[in-house]
Length: 78
Image (tube, rainbow, N blue to C red; front, side, top):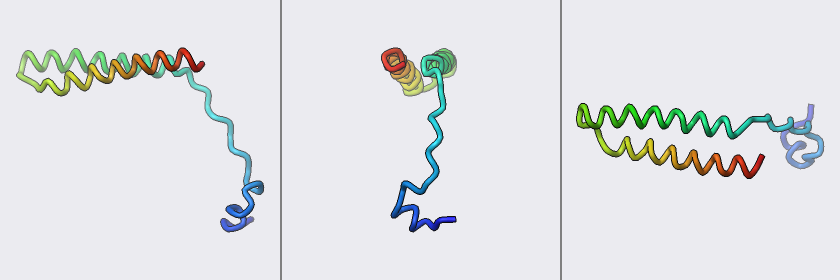
């Protein structure tokens, strides 16, 4: 078993890294946008029913906007 010092001095002795996992980022970003959309509906209902904060509405809207940018990025980098 090589020591840490040996592995740091000679990185070629390490085991090869595993391949990166395959994921459909379009689905991941889509699910995130869907969750932020549900959150937006809930926060809007709370805002008008109980006088909730406008910051939570803005956070959900920003999450949806950033998710949209993520969708564009995922489409370009398949």
